[in-house]
Image (cartoon, rainbow, N blue to C red; front, side, top):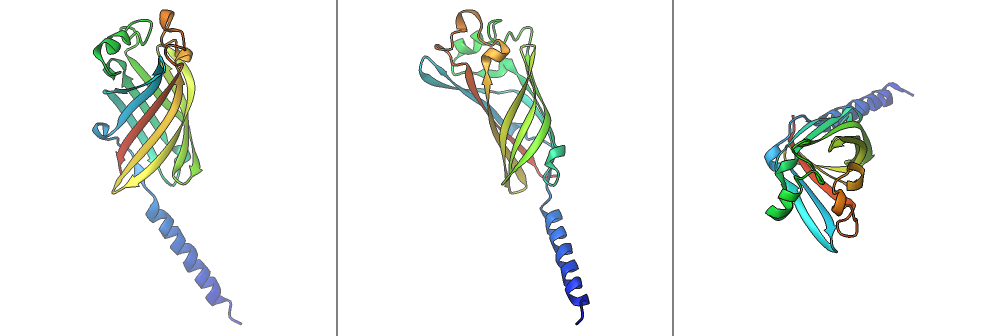
Length: 190
């Protein structure tokens, strides 16, 4: 019996699978800021409130074949908040809230990325907001679409952890402690 043919067949199959894996490899290294978005929701006196941040810079370095080596960063201009009306936007600039005169930006820098399967990932990192740095984690789903990657994610920010809404605003019955942050980062394939 000749064993060369099965070995050759096995080798060809391994090489073909290796080629397919490489063909599926995708890298994302630039962010399309105009197509990306950061939004948030929270409860205020029993009503759900929606808002966005209009100015931010995001960085990404993601290789689909090695997600654990990925890095991401985000810098948000806090004065670009749109909480639904100009009075709320002005109030959020004050010292009891973001104190944008002293802390104009919020920054996130990733420290780890863990693949969860099915294009889902957990990203952990340090968020600095109002001069306080805390570890946060976000669940992210990558949706590849026609030469771009759409990274959709969300996490819960507890405003008390960052002293956001102090003094008369510290009552979580009026404004919830939990702020649901959602983001969409759009990046072209490299």
